[in-house]
Image (tube, rainbow, N blue to C red; front, side):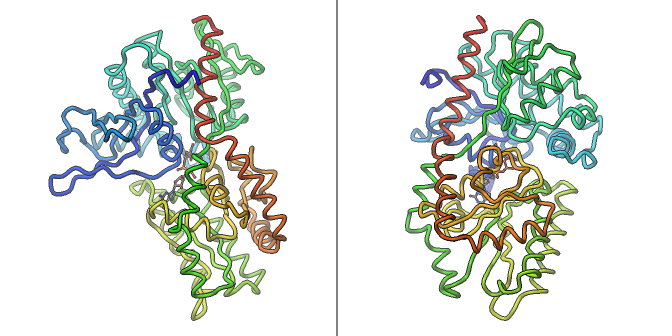
Length: 479
Ligand code: GDG
């Protein structure tokens, strides 16, 4: 493939490793999240440089990483460059504008979006800081692939310095419609920032279309919806959906490893007929964890015959734990789990098993493999990779996916999933009952169809499509 030849520089808020200092030693610990699950296999395979923050304030000073560029071992394919952020920058740019302004607004939680000019100033200055870190690494022929909502200003900041750069952007979260987006003070700056790119990728057609509409209505730019392009300063910017995916083969293979059977064996020891429902996500209000617990409560209320026969397992990864909304959510989820277990539990059975920590990937796969149903019902989600991981771990076809109509994944996976509105606890409770009663042959047919979608459109296919589309449009534009 053509893209194989180009050097890639990925730029994202965080590099995929947390840097931890213990007893003067520096340790690198892989972090968890959708962006990393998707991009790490690509970068590991084809090499390049990944630039981002290391997850702690003052990293290159306090941890003594002077060179700033750390090369991983030879068999792992890419290098990391750390961007140093101060505590105030983290507060304003990361906790503030990125996660208290843009994150809620882009997910449609308009009234939860806090605009504060101090947040904006930090967001701008940190995007400038990233720009100078990137410019130091450029020799001329690289593809610079910027990721996500933390860095929307970066493309244009780079373009202003060098008009010949090849800049790509991918937004991992939804892009809101015009009526929601225009509520944001600095909406114009965000659009202009992103338009510094040659190609902007979104998860779904709707996201791409929302962006094009905003360019037309807010910036008054010439937009061609059919050709998926915007004209800015006589430059053409391509805008297209590229639904992100996972390394299907890796999940499929790991699920056949003997360690992946352990969860099932230990649970079946206690009760051989037990049915398991699994949910996995960062503890985030967009994931609809509270609403889901209410649906689980409704399920046991409406279908008491499943008491002692079904366990709901909720795995939550701690996320953004310093932000008020996330601290409050944690408390509410803890209380709800307590209430439901208190209400329905019996001596040898509790309806909800709640795990609030990062578990090793092989254990996660073991949970996927053991579960009869995967409940992926966010209130809003860019894509949702858990849905794709679950079906990839189901080589025997013994599972069912209940999916929210508001997850980006619905665009590709709705036909063979059980689709629900996550706000409707009655519908979710009935869908669980339906999935549990579904005849084996029908379950298999659906899971195999879903596996085919993820297998045919895996993460390598995604990267190839994205980069080749860029090269094609770039060459056609005569630049
Ligand atoms: C953003 C967008 C979009 C979770 N718990 C554990 C664990 N995980 C892994 C899962 C999965 C990833 O975290 C979560 O990915 P999602 O896609 O579900 O969600 P976000 O983190 O919100 O990602 C999202 C994504 O970017 C990619 O574009 O799909 O819409 O919000 O890979 O497996 N991994 C391990 N232990 C855990 O306990 N090892």
